[in-house]
Image (cartoon, rainbow, N blue to C red; front, side, top):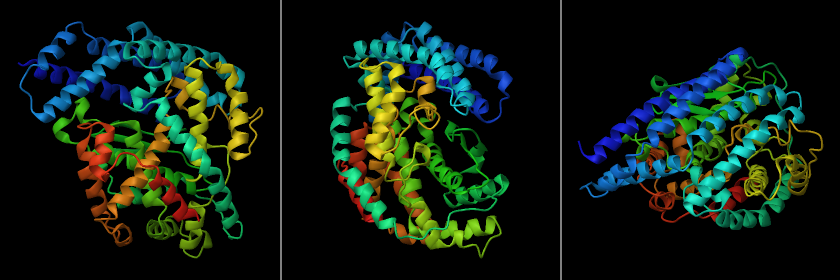
Length: 493
């Protein structure tokens, strides 16, 4: 067996353990009783340590060196590159830190689920303190090994090749035009008459509606399912994708579009090349590219007038409310493109959403680089929220710095992916219009031409290319935020 073959066999083994861990994580969020958390945390920590040991065996350095001398195809060379990148990511972090982070993250996240409801910053801070300390330790170790700043080293986990310098430039530019665009949109919409949901929308009916929308979006139910959790997510593995949403029985709007969003993530996973299943090269390119899929589904498809025509019909049927003006096409369109300055990122409209991301980016960047302390976060959150959206979060932790799940387990460096994803999605749409009649495809109810473009250009390519190369091959240029700005102007002005 060649060294390359030995490495691929090891990756398949690691993939199987990660598969098991993903299912344990999904179950903890969707099904597990509260009393099971301690034992589950121990089990997941044990798995994390085992995977880390497999990933950092002392002979692997020699295996990679020898594999690089073997005659490999272009695809195998890309596969080796991605295996080595993941190995280098794993080897720099000591096993003891991996175990400590897994336990601290599980404890913090589980407690957060009730602490957020109780607005209990004091209780949350006691757990989060450890998560932040361990994340800083990880960032320092990674930065030193990779020759990067602490925060750039964390960015590299989610967005290989992306730097603080590039994000500072990108987000600073967005901040020059976004506030004015928000104000203009608010002014334009001030005269609109919108009928908001006011009835009772049973969770069972919302789920049934969600399943119909997933069928329209060609979700493969033989390889995935929909469930309910506190925080919507997409998890599992490509052959068994788990997505979740949350239901509010007084408002169907958020859960429905949340399902569209998570289905975008799921279709990407289900569309990854089976020839590379279980290998790093067969995984999603980056979190930004992953978000580009969910945001393409939610923003470019889901909030288009053509798609809302389907939502209008299907939702009226689901709630047996054919004469209810809430479900009229024009009204639903106005609901789903309504701009409003709000506290909650996951509920934010497309236009104000980047402000939420930039706020989090600036805080976590300075937190990981040691510029600020974790106890500074509530006040900084308040100041930045006031500056960007004119809202106060003084003493309102549950709708401020405690609202997201990401920081509870140390996922620092993740938030920029959301706005990068929105920008990529706008760029795909701008390019796709050259060869696909997008509006006609959505209107017909057969979205296959759209999904074929995504499959050919993004899904099937997995991690064969760097992010910049992937985007350039798909669209003819690397990331160009002008497409995002143009999309927002066309939709909201």
